[in-house]
Image 1 (spheres, rainbow, N blue to C red):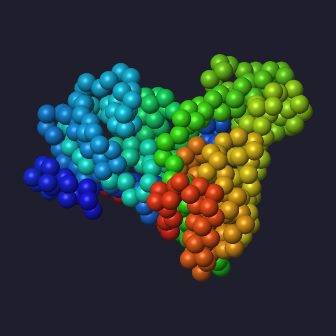
Image 2 (cartoon, rainbow, N blue to C red; image 1 turned 180 degrees about the horizontal axis):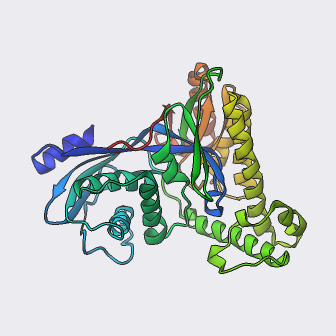
Image 3 (cartoon, rainbow, N blue to C red; image 1 turned 90 degrees about the horizontal axis):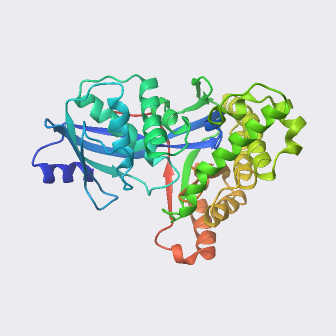
Length: 390
């Protein structure tokens, strides 16, 4: 790994450890975890490595192969607000961990991501890998639930992104050849094994070539619109409700939505429509996976992608085009854009015997639509994987 070589060259010693956290895909359940919905997900065999060692003076010193500038801070002197650089997620992780455990030892580290950034929850992956390394150096043993919660707080409460626990849970709890079926209301979960009669599959990642998109700021607005729908529906139905920030669609029965949805502004109604239909798709998808029916699971994933585009109203032109190409390509069971949808990639579950033709057809059609992205678009073939490894 390049991060190990660079660490050795920089610090003139071997790293004391290498932390790895996988990326994740969410074929169904996207844009519902922050409303306490249900999700399904898989960790993949690509992710973030951190080669690290201790710094007894309490300094955190990090460099990344994906970014130019080195970042540095002290475990007891963390900026109160995000600085605005790539390391904010890790400042947030230091801040969140220190709220639960005393920190004595700092960390020097080199970070290496094995895929382009965007759509696979690289932010959660780097937070979790870093938390694992910093905890180990400080003699802290985090339970899975603690790791998920602290990583969530780093991204939500420090960085300010209104995420749920989908990403963190997939990257911590996943098991190879199993589907994670998670209820984000109470964080109960099931790891559904791959049925022995299921047709073979691999996970294809189509990276759009778009790594940064200012439209990503619309993510928090979509969450607020979903909360607004929940708040209004509770009021229309005469339900008790508290503060706006606590309103979630999971607390609003489906029949209340059906009765009062015509009174919602269009945007709020569409956000709620996505939540309720996605909830149904996730439950149906889990049962399809349980019986080994990957065709039905894939079809539901395609439907999830359609709802994210037309009801959640996200997805850049590039990702919508990739999704449309995927829908008409032989050998793809199903898929959708991955992540918030403003940048990054689409994921698909594919029949491995079609991998070569899928790579060729999707690439040709996509680059015909966006020739300026030649050299930046890329195709990656992945498998399911276990969660974090320290």
